[in-house]
Amino acid sequence: MQSKKRIKLKKILSNYQLYLFILPALIYFIVFHYVPMYGVLIAFKDFVATKGIMGSPWVGFKHFERFFDSYQFWTLIKNTLGLSVTQLIVGFPLPIFLALMLNQIRSEKYKRFVQTVVYAPHFISVVVLAGMIYVFFSNNGLINNLILIFGGDPISFMAKPDWFKPLYIASGVWQETGWAAIIYLAALAGVSPELHEAAVMDGANKWQRIFHVDIPAIMPTAVILLILSVGNIMNIGFEKAYLLQTPMNQPAAEIIPTYVYKMGLQQAQYSFAAAVGLFNSVINLILLIAVNKFAKKLSGTGLW
Image (cartoon, rainbow, N blue to C red; front, side):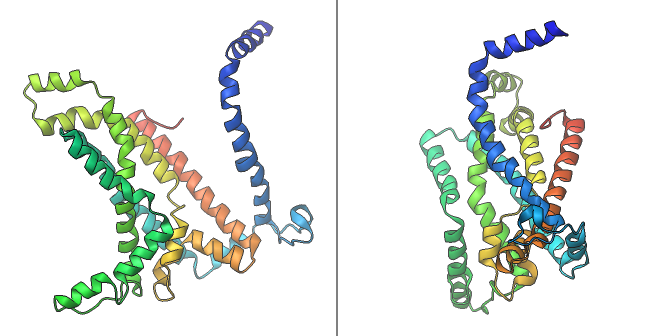
């Protein structure tokens, strides 16, 4: 036993540069991600600022029960899951398709131009994006002016709850598809040209090479990104949903992150907001573990 410990210690000392290299990242996660988790205790207390976290009285699952009994519970779950799942179904395959198409472009000049065009929206801030949506889709916006020119009736895009989800999903796809394709392009760059040459020798056309060489090569990357996306499914972007909310589209636009913000920071119900946020995180953790296990069993690829 002693000899095993000495061997381990010797290995660590011989590679001490690597341990020093990851030390800053380790300290960052401990200080900014693990130490603040102490504050989650207020979800089980009636937090009083003057008494502090430890001095506030314990109340058990009172705030969780209040959330589950709330008339807004199922609306929030439906809106959050509806947006997240739709965004995943629509937004996940598109970067793969775009990367496969970009990989087939032989003109480097044209390829760089297309890449620049599709990457650019990623650098637009969420606030500016929300402003653009209002400019284009408001009652006097560009889209309604075009509808009037062609003889149609204007549509209140920002006031009707039915239009919130299409606008949210479409704007997200436009902004992030090009950027998300970068990872798949990097994976495709690692495919050996000899595989394509062998496929050509066997008589495979372009589509057959995509299906039998390129897609299998990027599949492990796609599985990892899918697991991460599903594990983060309840954390749909707060900023855009909050900025696009209006009093009239709120029945479809209110999601758990915006509800936590309003309860916690606007109404100072810190314990209740912490309980709702903790519930959200636990659901994400369960989904992450379940999907990782399922993906590992199905494809042999997983996060751990």
